[in-house]
Image (tube, rainbow, N blue to C red; front, side):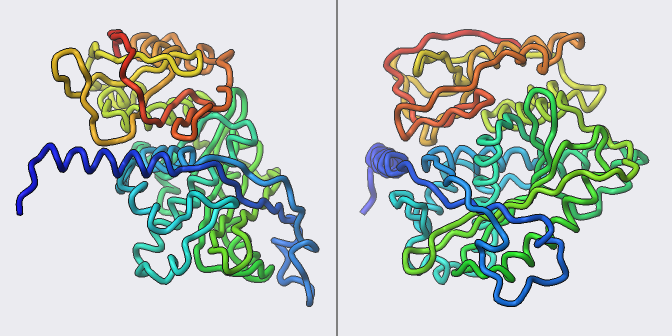
Length: 391
C-alpha cells in the first residue's frame, strides 16, 4: 500500500518532534585525575578511583545541548562530515537514554552495535561531552586541530607534523587557547583505575604533549577527557579528566592564535547552516575566494535575544513549512560581526565580540544556545522578520 507523501511528512515531523522533546536535562559524574598518577609507570597495588582522582560537581546539560555539541564537532572536522544533525539524533536515541538522570545507555545498547558503529558513535558522544565540559571551563570557541593542520600549505611547519597523531580540538576564550583530546567508551563498565589510566596516559603522551610544544603561541593548558557511558545495571556514567601543565620545551612555529580559533569555530557553524562559501571567505585560506554574497535570514526572538536562520525554508503563501531537521542559527549580533570581518581585512572577531555576553540558561529543553551564540533548536515560526546580510 502506497502512502501519500503528505502522510509521510507528517509522520517524520511527529517522530522528530517526539525525539527532540525527549531530550531532557541530565548529568554525568566528573573525576579529575592526578597528573602524576597518570604519568607513572603503574599504579600502586590496590589503588581505588578516589585515591588517584578528585570528584568534582557533575556536568549538567540537556540532551539537546549534547546533540548541538555533536553536530558542531562534526562540522569542525572538515575531512569527515558523518551524519550530522537529525541522523545522529535518531541513531543515538536507540542507544542513549536521554530521559535518564544521570545520563545512561539503554540496557544492552553496547551489545546491539557492531564494532564500527560502536566506535563511531562513542567517539562522537565523547567529543560532544568534551565540548560541553570546555564550555563549563569558560571556553567559548573551538577549532578542529587536524582539519586546520591539513589546510596548511605544503612546506610549512604544520605540514611537517600533519601525519602525527594529534589532539581533537583547540578551544579558546577571548584571550587564551586550550588543547583538548576527547575519548569515549560504552564498554568500560566499572571505574577500574588501571583501565582508565591506560587510556588517559596514551592520549596524554601521544596526542596532547607533542602539540603543546608544536603550537605557537603555546596553549595555556591541555586536557584529556575520557567519557564512559554505562547502562543502569553497572556503575554510573562518568568523565575522567587529566590536565597537564605546559613545559619549557622550545616550541615549533605552527601558528594558532585566538583569532584563528574563533574563525574556525564560526566557519564550522556556517558550513552547518549551509553557507560553505561564506565559511571559506571567513577563513581566507585561498587567494581566489569568491566575493561576498547577500543572503536572506529569518530573525526570531528567543529569550530576549535575536537569532538568525538561513531563509531556505519552504513556504505556502506567507507561512513557513517544516524543513525536516532541527534549525541551526546564530545570534544576530554575531552574524553581523562575521559580515564585517568578511568584508574588511581590518576587522577581527576577537575585537568585535570582546564584550559578547554569555547566554542565559535556555528555558526549554529543546532549545540549545552555546556561549559562542550558535543555536540548535526547534523554532516556532509564528513570528519572524527577514534581514539581508552580506557574507
